[in-house]
Length: 305
Image 1 (tube, rainbow, N blue to C red):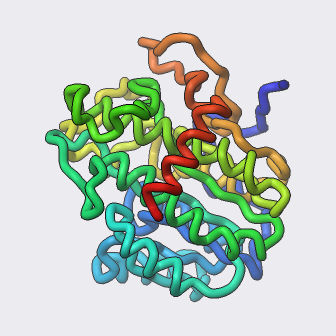
Image 2 (image 1 turned 120 degrees about the vertical axis):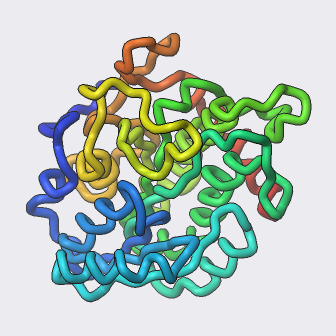
């Protein structure tokens, strides 16, 4: 299978990637759309004409961001809805209230390297429960709306952090394996990549495509537990550059029909056999494995009831 490349790359921005794309009449949801690269993802979608919903944990805080986005894009169709991905009841409330088709879903929100093992209201390890399971439930419960769009795209944010751990199916909550902040983070980001593989296998006939993205190293609130970015300066991106690959996967005609793959720097990532030490990227085989994706899907269905 030929690795996909595009005219864009490491330094490309979301506005460059979406230039010439018309999203008029389309509806999009961006989780975590009022902070970090979520803002730039929402901005690009709105500027291209989409009606964008910012799905956020703190709606009151997001109001100022939404107002600024409406002003900067000239698009009044930017709304805010409450969504706490760590709480499946909040996710269900969000999806129950959604009406009509959904053309673009960007599973963008996340937490990183929580220092101590914590749990969601439903008893799942916090990073797995928030970064992955909340997004799985959101996507699964919006399936009908995605199918109604006929050409929907789902983008799930993974990370180079997925190289720290596969999904540890027999001990997802670290009841036996010693908890480490980056081990748990890595597991959750591997799970996000496998979500796209699972969607591709199960929902292709519904016209739904899905890919995973490593946005790169961007200084945001995500690093509040790590003391900031450790990535060399030359490998860092601005928020608008960090949103570029998400926007490419969500909107570009260059990727029409492409699904179940992992992208970074606006190109499909090479599959690697060991974790690099030079920040060169790549995707681990276990993050694209069909059997892993199937097992995770079935396990997740049981978790969300």
